[in-house]
Amino acid sequence: MNSLKRIFFTLKTQLDNVADDFENHEAVAQAAIQELEAYRSKTLIHQHRLHQMIEQYETKRADLHQQAESWSARAVKLKGQNEQKALECVKRMLQTKQHIKELEPQLSKARDQFGQLDKDLTDIQAQLQALHTQKEVLSARQNRIQLQSSMSTGTANPTTGAQAIFKRWEQSVAGAELTGPLPPVKDRFAEEFEQEESEQELKHILEELVSKQQD
Image (cartoon, rainbow, N blue to C red):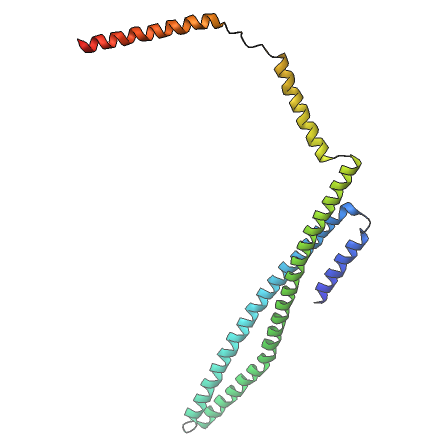
């Protein structure tokens, strides 16, 4: 956890150093989060390797227990046949049990380290979630302050700028409407004649259809 504490101390120092620089807060906070995420990734890799080591220790211990049992069974079997070989089997059994005894502290230490890393990762994840949330909240508050400031001073006011854009657009459209070509003037008198002629043509076609049907 010493490395984790050093990271937190470093991040706090970085934030304190830019306490008077309002615009740099978000960038520094993001850099702090990325640094903590990189540390989490390294911790995950170390934990994975430690898990593999624990599995190897457990496999080796199980194999040694099996060997010790085999040497014990051989010693019992050879006791009445060849005492010298039986004693050698007992010796091998004791050596194997000694290996098991030496392996146990290593396995226990590896398990303790794995558990500590698991706790560290839980703490890191909680810190990351808190930092992400705090960053979003502070970023929203900062943006709101900047927006209110620009609107109150009239400097780079986004609302005013948007209104000006639409106003210029409307003026452009209105100007085009005024300077564009005038629509042709309709001659209602001529239109009445055209409509009557069209109706007469339709009646004529209808009469022809009826005449063909009767034939």
